[in-house]
Image (cartoon, one colour):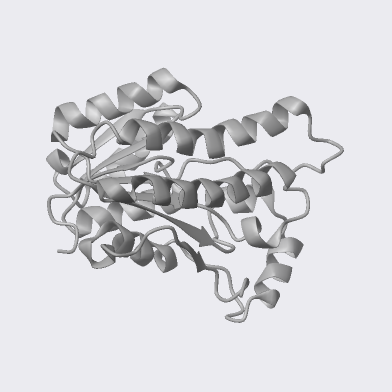
Length: 247
């Protein structure tokens, strides 16, 4: 098991990419905390995990990463249950599809506050508990390098995550904390289906050398690698997992 006895927090993990990562981490022997903002979705995700994994290996917490107090409480709950922290995966995010003319100040600020601000808050809080080093993995996006129509706020937030990843990697390396980002391409999650029409998805698939969008299972391996000791000399990288869409 590549993650045996490691303790991980995965934000935005009640569905989609985050939940798939949680399942793979549990399979690899980790203790995992999943979190989100919707209690019903959290309960459903926990029921899924209970079907396959020992309940003492995972925890579910309601947390809005835009709220500093809730972030602090999330980490306290994890430490109270598992007594340490090895891995933080900053995966929580929103991607409202609006033209720049339609996007209000509040719309834009909300995307930045959740996607980039949430990554910042959780990273800052993790440093209190990664006393023996650790791995921080941020979920970026191919749009951070490629751009996207009707996604000015989302693109800006993910580009900022790339910069934050590199800055934190340089600053935290002395503490044996590695910081990397994964930049997925088009992944067939509910968020993508809700924010992209079929024509857009088909066009992106045709532009991808592998001629398809990713499944969540196409992504989990890189998160396992970055959380494991196999990547102990990997930091400050933005890893594209996009079928060759950006190269």
